[in-house]
Image 1 (cartoon, rainbow, N blue to C red):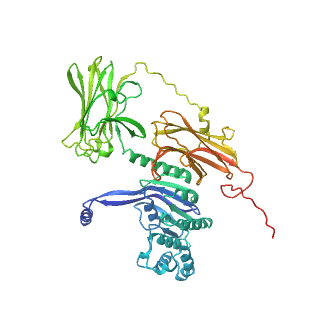
Image 2 (cartoon, helix red, strand yellow):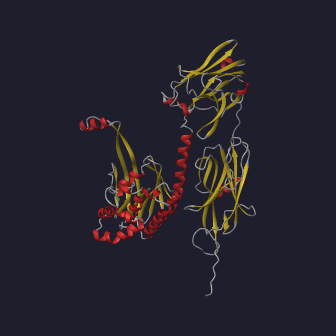
Length: 586
């Protein structure tokens, strides 16, 4: 039997650019349209069985609060339908449903009457509500004098004491202090044991793991994942990581293809930058720089306009010039005009233009990102020429002319490309991957965890342990850049609902400085599995710790290894504290 049934639910809002537009549309009685439709929710369908707890995760603006407001009866849907069987008690936005000029006492009675309780029923519960909220004499003060924490304590206390069949909680518990949060979660568990249905929304993934029997992930007003809380939480983390990566990369877009398979590189302009003749502003010299496109590190030549870079190169038969042009993302909204990119070839004393393009990212969104080109060099075959890369301003103002030439090469088609044979094998080094199940992986790939090994104390690979055994986790990794500062490897042991124990090389004071690119490194974690019987998993991470609050994820692998622990003596909980029990004679 389902307590909540939602079928193709949608919510549309009208967005107006100005109050005048709203007024004009209203006065025209629908003849003039001055709004655009925004669907905060679309095609939302799910069921919540009676007595279960559903967790809803999503980034800010994903539609979580709108969905709960509809289910609580605060908003009407624009499409679809929903059915609720039972009395609903909801804690939505901070203080919603309460009147700021009423005292706490008056708000308790008002909310209780809305929930269908008589004054006598509220009288019986009132002392318990005040005790749970710890408001004391403040219960007689106007709500406007309360702190946010006091409002949440009152709201939750009332909501859980009105004998509702369904409890809806929308991120309100994040405001309360640690002691009150523990009390709330204990009360929620009591309601779960009593067979109540709970809909919990928040960013506290540990709460979703521990409280919820199932979860769903909202993004852009749609459900993108649903199912086991652990699985949905991993998807949520990946969604956040993708958003952060997109922000860091400046939403870089790549236009056009790069010649790779079937081409061989004859000359690399970035690698030969030191051999070039360079003319540039003294304060902003031409230099090599690393950027990221689609989480892949790439080299570019930063050349603030005006600049000129000249190479002397011999052009072979069948050669082409492959390159990219772009303006750094930080200048997109600041550059007043634009940058003009020109390539000339000086041959036999005659200069010929082979490429010219202006990028104006502030005026034209299509000029943002990196633009790849391939120019044939057939007229210059067999000649030694000067190739001149030039940047200049498209107007008089050259400020923020942060232009760059990307991955420039002379390439030619391979005459006899090798035939590639693809073989699918499981090598000894990746045997541990057989133990993995449902792994989630993300990061910017400046470094990579190549594989993880799980072994017993005799270095035998296994995924079965007895409680108390020593487990050894070896994390293999490579870097794609030299000497990354504050490099840290982390390893976390977890069960289906929460992290049990985690540590990293920084906390263990293992210094990982001065590591070289493309070399293979191994970090070993050894720990005693003094835990209860069950199925567990391992998370591994390769990160750069910039500060206590800022971490750059190079490669993070959730649930990369799954293993089983068996324990002979029964116990309750997760950690075996090796208790000793004896009788004291009196």
